[in-house]
Amino acid sequence: MDTLCITGAVFSGKGEGAKYVGLLWVEEQIIRKLGFVPYVGTLNIRLTEDDAKRLAKVLEKAKAIEISPVAGFRRGKCYRASLADGIECAIVIPDATDHSEDVLEIVAPVNLRDRFHLGDGDLLDIRVHL
Image (cartoon, rainbow, N blue to C red; front, side, top):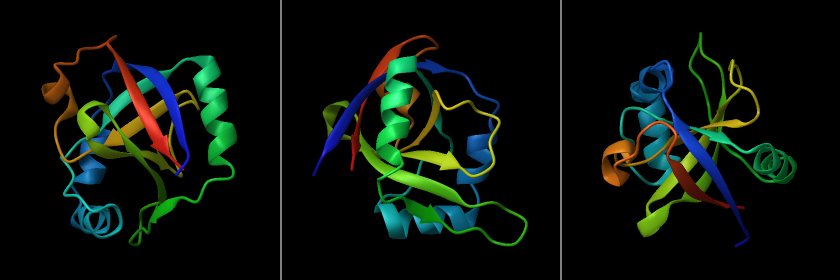
């Protein structure tokens, strides 16, 4: 399996990821398609300009894991990833977002801020599995 290693800085979001991941139909699809029960929330990461460009180029060709919406919601795409200590996670790219392409949301089975003692501005290495 090919892997792309990228680095980004943690930043606080608006809490929208928690609302989305907390929906039963989203949780069920993450369990079924990604193989873990998600922590209710996402970790926001801002990539460097170079890493954002590299990731965008790679994801154009990569096969996404789709989160199929119920009526009134939009589709989301996930890509398998992992972090330090081998924690499996996924980067989530919603179809409708106000984030720029340098911003990632990460969903994982644990609260990543607590697990790694992360604060805004801390750097995190992410391995995206393609």
